[in-house]
Amino acid sequence: MKKKFKLVDLDCANCAAKMENAIKKIDGVTDANVSFMMQKMTIEADDARFDEIMQEVVRVCKKVEPDCQIQM
Image (cartoon, rainbow, N blue to C red; front, side, top):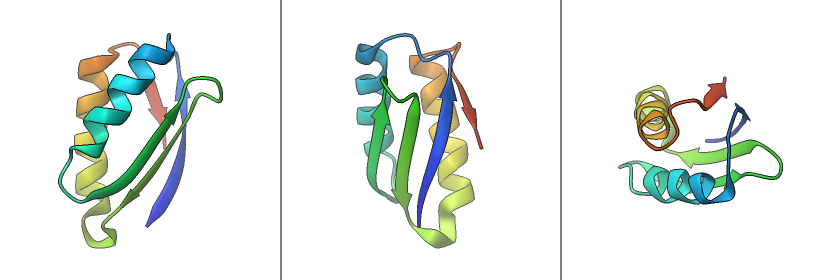
């Protein structure tokens, strides 16, 4: 499953790159893209575990950029 999400308060391109790298390391994620310019995130992950994976994505993103919110 591939889904797109809007990001709010993503402050810099470096944080976006860190988030993208951290998300790609999550088990079950096949691809991830975080765009600072567009303030959007695209995640492709295992359909059966997508909700569980998204909880981990939110946790990882908060660790890198505490002010950033993912609108689902």
